[in-house]
Image 1 (cartoon, rainbow, N blue to C red):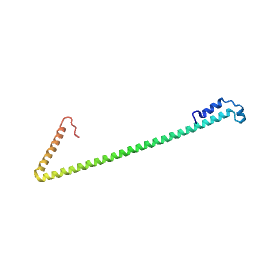
Image 2 (spheres, rainbow, N blue to C red):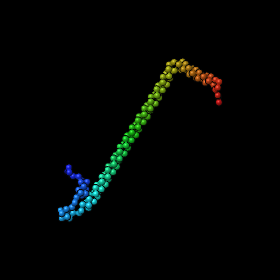
Image 3 (cartoon, one colour):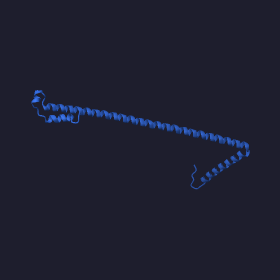
Image 4 (spheres, one colour):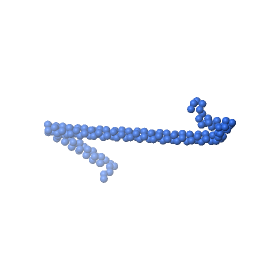
Length: 150
């Protein structure tokens, strides 16, 4: 594993160009073709292992990506639910505020009516006039040419 180590490729290159001599024969070494076949088998095994490792790494990366996406989606859902709860609370507070305002206005009208008996009579006459005006404007529009009454 030093700077001159060429790995399996270096071994294959050696056996592709090697010619056995006396030393190889005395050591009873197999011919270069057999050693080259062994080196090729080793290289194929290493490539298969590397491919398997890459496949596992890719699966792990995909799993982490899916977990991240699920976590982000869950956070978005929680944020939306919180926003909806806050909006519902705000609407409820507005409704309560309007009810309190209506009650206050109703009490003020009652107080004014007690303080000044003509006040209620005046406002009821005003409401009657407004109703009469609305009714007359409807009748006038019904009397217009082209108005169909069913």
